[in-house]
Image 1 (spheres, helix red, strand yellow):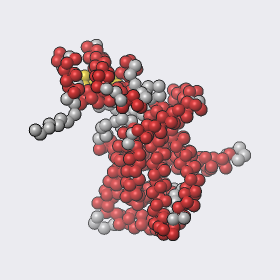
Image 2: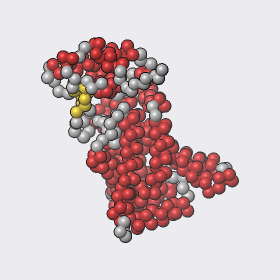
Image 3: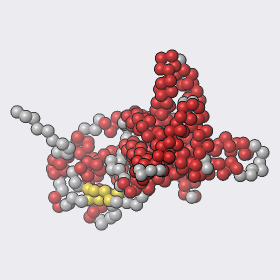
Length: 383
């Protein structure tokens, strides 16, 4: 615990206003450079499709914990949906739950609801993995466990916040202050777990604490933006009629997923601060530069093998060779592609480790250069 507190102090000392602005700018640039905008659109689409099933499960779990009314209040106050639409959604979710609890297809119904949640979280994991430059998704059984933990953390964090509110506070105005901060605290705790657990790689807790704090604040404050959007979209009622709610809901979902993905990028920037290449430099590397970097990384693996040392991580290579971590990760993927190295299974939460698998007696500069040239799919011109 003291180690985490000391790291938080270190981050707080380094996170001055100019540094904070620079890192947030880096997070947005990373968002724009990667496919995150496409992922945000994809997540909007999947959220729209799975909204009713996920809401049904959320309300069902919330009823077990006695916080279903809190969910209803948040859905009414924090979404562009009017009371009539919310009531219609609640009736639909109740009908869905009743159908899955009764009849011969009850088991199939519950499996279908569970599959919807797993599918939704799988898309979220892929989006976060693309930010953390992870190519391989987690195994199915780990998906089930990790997704369940993340999904369950929202009601747990809400219950924790409500317990905090209901405690007897002797200090004047403290209870009122706690009641104001409780929604922020619940979201903060949830997003710490969300950003730490869902990417299929080791994410340090300290960067997620900072990014979760910022994103939970922005998401709570997005209600003000929602009110302004409602006023703007209100002018389209004459054109869209009742469909204006759908238009506003899609804009609302896009804003939410944009903020969530920006938070993930901010965690990535914080965790790898001082160890990132300039974005333009990564894209414009010529083959000779990539070859020299690959050669240096491969040499490190050969030394590691000859010295009978433990498998190594990308960060260890990056630190020792003074090469930005993003370049090292790309290089490791290339070396895996030509069957020179492989990653080994690690415990949950540990950083991915790599070891040499090629025969070192067969490795030389010419072979490495030729294998890199042939990496990828080949295409033959028909004469």
